[in-house]
Length: 137
Image (cartoon, rainbow, N blue to C red; front, side, top):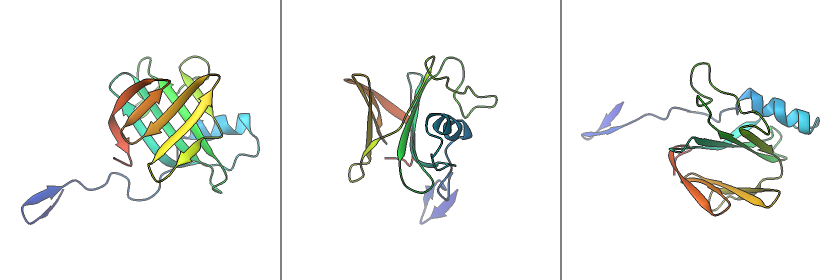
């Protein structure tokens, strides 16, 4: 912790742009062999209701991807963490639309729109507030 003038500030846990988890790059390559990996983290959110999502950008800046995870047992980041499985508890989709001014990222799968912001994850009309976000709101 850093103290300045009596105030205590937490140092950033990530001091430089981070790569998205390897399983996202691997999944993107399966869907699109030309995907530029490793992917860079744009936004991550975790809700109190067993949901987490990543927005990842291809290394060359050419595309954004959404990875959603409905936690069954563990969060991905925990030791021995759970890796989302497409069709079971995970959804990986390309062609994310970015509203960078509002830090909002959306993708549609079938008739459902998934939107990630630093404040949470919205699936259809249901919003799941973030309990953790990087970068924060």
